[in-house]
Image (spheres, rainbow, N blue to C red):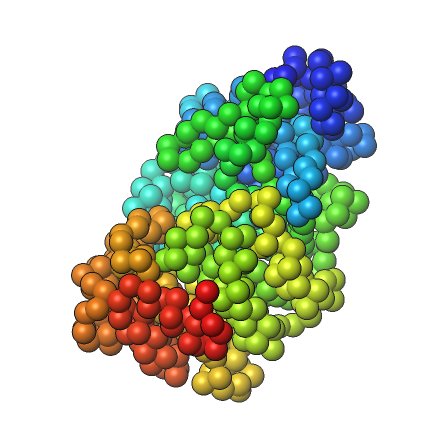
Amino acid sequence: MELSIAGLKQGTDYATAGISVPTFDVAQMQTSGRETPRWVHLGPGNIFRVFIAKIAHSMIADGKRWPITAVVPRDAAKLDLQLAPHDLMTLGVTLNPDGTRSLDVIAGMSEALAASRIADFERLMEVAVREEVTLVSLTITEKGYAVRDSSGDLAAAARHAITADPHQQQSHAMALLATLLLRRWEAGGPPITLLSCDNFSHNGDKLRDAIFTIIAGWAERGAVSPEFVAWARDGSRVAFPISVIDKITPLPNQSVADGLAELGFSDMGLVTAGQTPVAGFVNTESAQYLVIEDNFAAQRPPFEEYGVQMVSREVCDAFEHMKVTTCLNPLHTALAVTGCLLRFPTIDAEMRDPLLAELVHRLGWSEGLPVVVDPGIVSPADFLTEVETVRFPNRYLPDDPARIAMDTSQKLPIRFGETIKRYLERGLGLEQLEVIPLVFALWCRYLMGIADDGAPFTPSSDPLLEELQAHVSHIALGDHIDVHEALNPILANAEIFAVDLYETPLAAKVENYFSRLIAGPGAVRAVLAEVLNKESE
């Protein structure tokens, strides 16, 4: 079997293998979608292909025309290797906790473009100005929104975008969207919604602020008119709803590829795009949540008919805080950095270690849940229970701690800083927190690039990695150092923790834990056991 439009004609093979296939004519849908586009999406990565594109697929199957024009903002190779060979379709592989698998061919895309290619860029601009295109969504990860560096100054890419032709911005996602809006305004300015589906707090607000930074730079040098600026800032013309997305989608796993080969697929092997493995399939879990603020400037897809929660901003905000700051993301980060230090191969393997299971249990239930607001659409206790007992321990969904550890410096202010701020706002003593400062200390220990066995490892990519490692990479296990001097530049950085930890009791705890974590090989596990009052195994 091959995943392609031609391959779908081998219907008997797919049926024999138990694979769900589209009930509509994919080729006809794609032709129609190119002629009359409706929805543009930037960043057709794994979570998009298996979740958002599946929503579009289901709508199309029901006769609701919302095909997606997918846009790769930078790395055209991913389009060439991951989408083009399969006629823009994806094989969704759902790995259930009981060991069963569900296989679905997903066909929600009608067109795919690489913004870095001139012809594709111009095609995108042609699509973007059309009145029937009313939605642009994004999954480009949080760093794709960065227009400022760690010091708060404009990043080099943003400075270049501001000084260059506003009609021809291809290299930076935020500038690309600003150009899209400019071209749309010049074509008459039909309303449009820009919907971030990236996994960080107040994503729509950050999207709006990043785009407006570019536009303000253009306006300051007279490259765009005040009328365009006013139109872009008019929420009834250009809307930026917030959203929360949740579905664990690890990088494609070789064991899954092997299973698909045994099933008869000849084109589901892993290939490499840069340093990242890509494939025609996406392996994922069954659990999924998408909550969107119902604030659109133009016609939107009927999301609520396809499992999406369309809610008020207040409810979306509460769900986000529950998920991102308490019930999932902080637990993931704790397991990620600790798993790298202890050389665990997968998140699920960590959850079978009683010590690490206790770490996330205490972090969620004892220190996070007391300051959570119930969003009313999902019980925080039920959500946390599902994460702790079903989702993270799923041994059939192999997820690498190093993947979760990427860009940790960008995640800490939301995943932990928001909880700290809520303790302060409610007058709750931070002295009672033990696990949160322990996780901070583990992260500082992780930055050393030395595992608990005393041998080196390579920390995951992070925009601040080089800067942060400069403070701790000289430390050797067993050193007697001035811990305060080493950690002060890190712990005092309110951009990382949302507060200056030295203005709280937490900095002293982090320094104390860190000094014990560097005592020698085996110290990480020993400190975890001591703090959690649980025997190390």
